[in-house]
Length: 315
Image 1 (cartoon, rainbow, N blue to C red):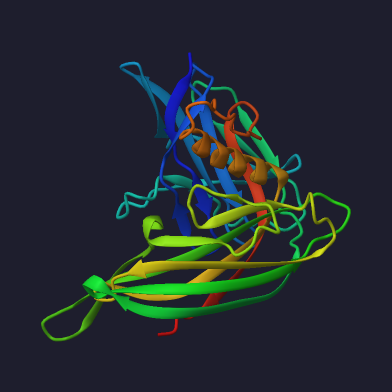
Image 2 (cartoon, rainbow, N blue to C red):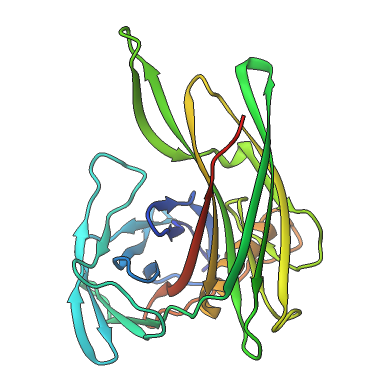
C-alpha cells in the first residue's frame, strides 16, 4: 500500500523559525512511522519536531508527538534531555522539543535518541560542517508604485564564495523578506502587529545565468547547490528577483541573504523534496524516494553552518 500524507517541512533558522507549507509526499510504507526533523547550527539551541503517521478512514496523515523523550549525546556521553515547547499564541508553529542549555559546536558529531511509546528507539547522528569562506554580498533595488497602492521591488544580489578543494561540499542559499503588519489608531499612533515572511506567490527570484547548476527548493526562494563541477574554485553567483507588497498594511524588514554550508544528508533530503514536488506535475514521473538519515524512523537530523547578510530596502 502506498502511504500518502502531508509532511511538515521545518527549516530552523538562526534567529527565527520558518515553517514551510505541508507537502504531499508519497512513501511506500503502510505501518505507522515516526518522523524526526531537526536542522541545527552553531551556538543555537537544538530544536526537534517529532511526528507520527496515522490512518483514519483509509486516509493517511501525520500528527505531532508531544509525549516523546528526546535526548542528545556527544558520542556515548549523555548531554541533555530536551523539553517540550508549545507556542499557544501561534498555531503555525507546531509543538517541538528544545534543549535548555546545550548548543552545538562545529565538527562534533551529535546523536539524538527519540523514545515514543509503542515504538522502537530512534537514533540519528550529524555534525555541523565547516563553513565555506563567503566573500562580499552585494544588493541593490528599485522601487516602483503600481496599481492598487501596491509597491513592486526589483532587486539584484551578487555573492561569491571559495569552495574547499578535494572534498564534496553542499550549499543552501536562501532569500528572506519579512514584513510587519501595522495599523494606525485614532490617535495617529502606529501599532505594530505580527511579522511574517512575504507570501511566496508575491516573490520571484532566479539566478541571472545558468553557469552554476542548482535546484530550486519548494519554497521558491532558496537554491541547493553541490560542488561536483566546481571543486576548489572561487564561485560568483548573481541573482535577480522582485516582490510586491502593500505599504498601507505592511512595513518592510531588511532583506536577508542566508548562505548555508550543509551536510550531504541535508542536501539529499531537501533536493529529494524538491524533485518529488516537481514530479507531482508530471503524469509520467513516479514518486521520488525522500532521503532519510534517521535510524528506526524517517526524516532528517542535520547540522549546517550559516551566515546571514542583511540589506535595507531603498525607495
